[in-house]
Image 1 (cartoon, rainbow, N blue to C red):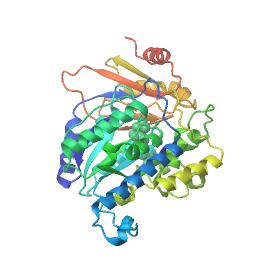
Image 2 (image 1 turned 180 degrees about the horizontal axis):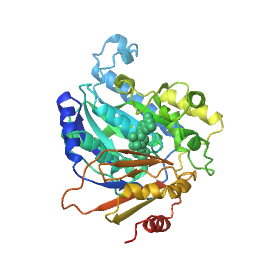
Image 3 (image 1 turned 45 degrees about the vertical axis):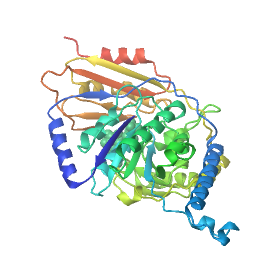
Image 4 (image 1 turned 90 degrees about the vertical axis):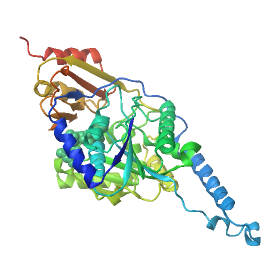
Length: 416
Ligand SMILES: Nc1nc2c(ncn2[C@@H]2O[C@H](COP(=O)(O)OP(=O)(O)OP(=O)(O)O)[C@@H](O)[C@H]2O)c(=O)[nH]1
């Protein structure tokens, strides 16, 4: 997880463009894999959320009566709740969505837009390679600091780290940013993250959850939504939709209109209350995702109920995520190597247990990310003159065999 403070002023955007230009003088390749156990999650979301909601309401009422001038009327209990003081807590937005759905793309769209907000970013990453952290940092010259935390998921103990990170931001940077954005991993169940904003006093007192924005990959969502999980295992893709305030059906350029419509219908059956937009490359108006005005816990509870009654599994037990990082030192162009091994990636990414072979190649000004069998490139940076040519492939998935993957890729290296 990385936290970065970013401004989206025009000047900063220009600096970001310059930084990108400088970055393009080097080469780097990163690919994503990883293997770290997902931790067991706490209480079921509805129950946990309800506890959070109750204590939230209780505290808001307490704050109201503490701040108001006592009158006879109030002593009798009338009108006390009307005088709630303004809520000046810092708004926070959770961006979630399955692997490769376009979370980082949306985040960069937000950070480079001219909304005048100073935004602190918290990135949740798998494994030891902070791909998204550096992608975001590369595009935001306004970053004041980056904190890394690579524990894989924002639940259980890692939630403690989120609490600490928010605490640190508030303690050290209060007044220097207006909004916090948290980008979760693609395999995160948002429920425990949401719960953090209600159950943790240190967060609750200074930060309010503004909204949950869920990206849905128009091309691959069905695969994830259809995945039948073992009993007691949560389907994260379902959770991400059920808990959303705003849904962005992204990547509509990759599918036909009827496919998008049928997906939208399906999403609607899972969460009727969220606003929904279709998009390419996460391009939505910023007021659609920022300043939503408060996460509605009661609405989400009813959305969860709706999901449950449809027979979907939304309990909180986490899957075991195996992540694998393969590091290779070589002169070979990683991009072409990966392309030559497409059948390999294809096999794995069509296994419902393996959702993403995200590949970021720092090779030839080319940054490569793969979701299922689609690989796309975008310019990154050139190698520094004396920079060791180390390429990393990071896979995120379940039941991965790291040794087999590593051997398969290394067998593809050109032999002299
Ligand atoms: N064709 C197409 N590609 C997109 C769109 N949005 C994002 N992408 C590409 O999809 C890939 C994954 O996008 P990301 O923004 O990294 O997705 P993510 O959800 O952050 O991915 P993870 O962090 O791996 O979960 C990148 O290569 C993007 O350029 C879109 O609307 N259409």
